[in-house]
Amino acid sequence: MDTLANLAMGFGVALTPFTLMLAIIGCFLGTIIGALPGLGPANGVAILIPLTFTFGLDATSALVLMTSVYYGAMYGGRISSILLNIPGDEPALMTTLDGYPMAKQGKAAEALVLSGVASFVGAFFATIGLIILAPMLARVAYLFGPAEYFALYLLAFCTLGGMASNNQAKSAIAACIGLGIAMIGLDNTSGMPRFTYGNLHLMDGVDFLVAIVGLFAITEVFFFIESHGKDSAIGVKLGKVTIPFRMIKDSMGTMFRSTFIGFFAGVLPGAGASLGSFMAYMAEKAISKNPDSFGKGNPRGVAAPEAGNNAAAGGALVPMLTLGVPGSGTTAVLLALLMTLNITPGPTLFADRPEVVWGLIASLLISNFVLLIMNVPMVKIFVYVLQVPAWVLMPAVTMISFVGIYSLSGSYFDLVLMVAFGAFGYFLRKLDIPTVPIILGILLGNQMENAMRRAMVLSDGDWTYLFSTPIAIGLWLFAILGFVAPMFLRGVLKKPQAVTD
Image (cartoon, rainbow, N blue to C red; front, side):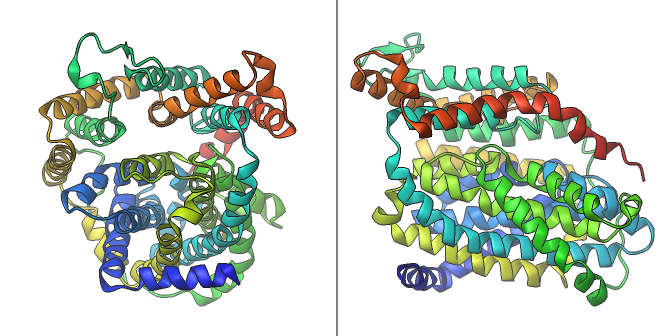
């Protein structure tokens, strides 16, 4: 009954005209961002976060807007995947395997509508799972002490980006870079400056929003400049959009199975939508009576990854809200937003700021229906947005980034630092070093250090205290497994990508 009462309170927050308007705007912008090849939800949320400070949104409004962008981007990633064989983001990669062959067979509209419905099913039931599981996990989180939290942070570092990265060593290097950046500033215990080199602007440390916008948005601008916008999707034409009721009916079982798989993958810290999409696709292919049809335009090959990756997006919010540990790259960016707004995710969030949590959950339920309505009749409109030339899009991204960061701090040094992070991110991507572990290191580095120090104080310097409870031991084992497993599974993960048109 408490859950229903809290949800009713959440709908009271979400159904206010201003919050509802933000959810609709976020869904629209997110779908556009998801459709643009290469941007994806993490980049999209990072690019738009400065808007929340420019317009002075409160915590609930800012979080509703950004999570609506998040869900919208997960929906939108399928558009360019199906029409152009260009994934809007990594989770949409699996959609290209059967979506693009369907488009080549003249079934582009059917594939787009089917994927929109599958996205709705995955995201809607994942939000229901969030309602049920998050309060339960929040109560379990009270069992966590310094040793458990240190192991949990380690688990996030070991698993986040592991499946998507081409090299575990590079992921480890990126995490170490992020932890090193987190050490910049005054030491919390002694008050001594660390790695500031006498620069007063660095005494308070590096603002993670400056790093996020630089590493994502500004880096993307540099890559657009380098490619002259050659990767932008242009020239797409669609016929009449129809609703393939028979195709949707035949794929309902696929959608529900994939939703369960995707949600489970999303709840695991670091697994994220990419793994959810892959597992859902491979599971559906494994149980199919005609597995050879996958990769050749099988509608279930479209429904499975779309339901899986959208369910994973909802599942990734569970550890972020209840434990303060992001379940994906995008939730790492959302975690930065919460911390900037002086909101500490964790078990006490549900008691201290229930209007934020339940208003967010209610807004997600509403956003799913908005996205379903938006993604069927407005498919042709979104395709036109894909034709926005780079010379219009990139200056807009740059302007939003600079105005937003300056409105946040009023410091020219942060603008210079943002550009420096952008150049650094460009260099890292050239070396195929992932940037998400760097962001995670900046976000969680100080908490990880504090957890370690508290553990050492409680144990009088006995390092075995870090393995003193079953929960801590389990998290250590999962962390080691999460880091080592991708080394053996990477070859398997790449096999589906070899399927040709």
